[in-house]
Image (cartoon, rainbow, N blue to C red):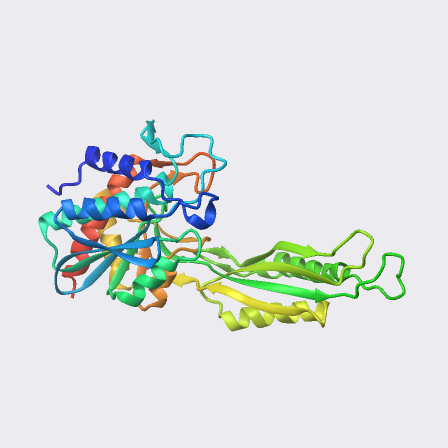
Length: 380
């Protein structure tokens, strides 16, 4: 019998939730980071006869790396992130796990300490039973902000396949969207509010861009859809302009986000938006300052087949393949040449005032990971 017992997994999940690991970029608490959780996870793994150590990405920002097996065969990676979002608007005690109707409540219970507990539990089981090849763990920081943890991990370590455990309602996630961020700046001409003859409002000029982008989003992008992740989209997220109510605005700036499909190319997306903006306002300046790629895993990849087989073994039915509209660290592993899929527990309340995870689904996720590891590392 595989040693994946619900009481032990439940206790582990409680222990994880009790340790605050709020991303320091998402809280005013300057002492906040993932270090205390990383130290607990490292020590827990070592106590279960698994080699594990901290890899500091930046001062105070740790990944935990662990490995099982002698490497005589394929290398599989399990990935989960250590950080959570903030707790400012929560209406339940964030770090006091409570259980009601088979659900565990608390910050990070769903996103993604449930998935983390599943990874740790499956790894402990595999350390007991043995694994052909090698299993490595990528327990990373900063997924909720800039994913510096996953970026650092793939620079240091290689694998033949990867499984993430972001909450997915036990669906097998084969794809998700990417995104691009841009800053658009429009110039005006500053003048006293009475000088209509010489003043030019940058805010009014920006209005034509806002109308054009909104029309482009609703009439064009929403018609481009992927069977797994849904339609493309974009929105204006921030705006700033003007210096006083009686002064013509000399500048106006907006930030836009464009959510991309797996089939879309970054340069084509950028060029298309630039054409729309310059048609509406020829002297607008556009700065593309951050992007993350979309993710797609071919269903014929061995890692995808192994997860599907494991799902059938554990739940006795065929797993549903799906996609995410959101972005995850899976794209970083996929872009690094590591075929990646995601499967995680059932839950609710990602980034919301009330957050919970279904405990039975955490146990099921751990069992799926265990069987998928055996299937993948034993495949040719």
